[in-house]
Amino acid sequence: MVFLRTLVIGALLLSVTPSRSTVSESTSSLAHNNTIAIAVPLTDIQIDGDLTDWPNDLPIYKLRERWDSKGPFDEKGALLDTSADFSPHFRVGYNLQDRSLYVAIETRDDTLHAGDASELYLHTSEDLDQNPLHFVREYHEAEVDISDNLNFLDALFFTDERLAESGISAAVGHLDNIPTYEWSLNLSDQVIERLTHARSEVRLRFDLKLTDIDNDVGEDGEGSLYLSWSPNSKKDENVLALGGLVFAEDRSQMVQLQGTLKGEDDKPLPGSKIRVENPEQTWIDEVYSDSKGYFNTWALSGDLQVSVKGLVAADTLHLSHVRPSTFIRLESAPFQRRNSPHPGR
Image 1 (cartoon, rainbow, N blue to C red):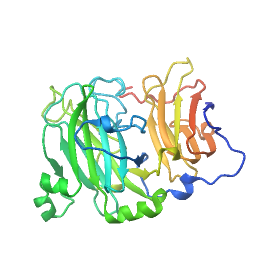
Image 2 (image 1 turned 90 degrees about the vertical axis):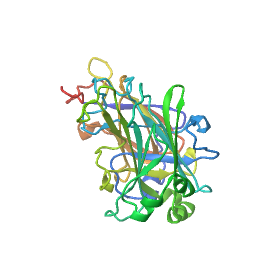
Image 3 (image 1 turned 180 degrees about the horizontal axis):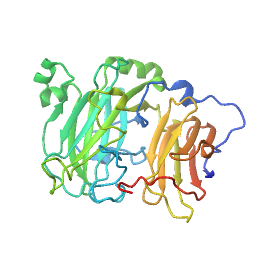
Image 4 (image 1 turned 90 degrees about the horizontal axis):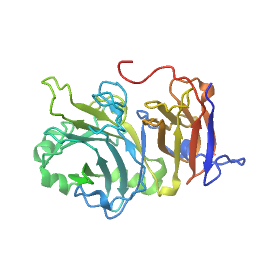
């Protein structure tokens, strides 16, 4: 049996008085693929590949889902968090005046080769038969590629200038020798209208993929690493394979949850998947623990429960009426993990 216990830092965690749940009542029930990011308001962002104009205290979301579902490990079996080869994460924000969604990606890629790329997916319609917008920027290419889910004339005439004029732009750079990608996507009139009048109810489908090409890649692509934010790398014609994106009015609406998982011998349990959700399951977010068993994630305020995949329901920690701006640290008592996520074991 695992007992998750809480160490409360800052605001009180449990409230004895009723409180409305922002997560369950205000957030759309739009289906998403077990990952949710929170976009926060940003100003003065320049799309130039230099991320120094991005705030340092934004939530960070890691890309740890391999195309072959072998867990958060690189091709040599090292955890991606410790891998010198590839360890990407991103931040996301928006600006209503600029009508823009901003994405900053840091890859920690040891070598850059032709074919290394970042890909963004965005789906703003309720129509599940409509393919998501799909944009690709290769690190060594100056142009943004667009998927064929745009109509023929759009695809034909969307040159780099047209992309920039329409609010879609991307740039690459380095931050402390870490390769970076920086994106700006234009938000439609309909999305801007919804964000203006009911921001907390807006949820879009959104996702990222990163490609790392290595020196010893074979003709069949073996040796390359393809990562996505949410599970299932086949996203072009499946909007339900995309993660979710919600919009906070300010950072005070968010709740930060951190924790450490340890085994019976009190050693860290890396590569375990932690699930944070609300009772209605309109908020489901899953993250991996790192090499020290540590995990970190963000949510909006409300009723939340935290569990570790592979454990019984009795091991779920229920957090009632978690208020905005709360910081929660979780620790687990020693337990025996049932299945190792490491490939080949």
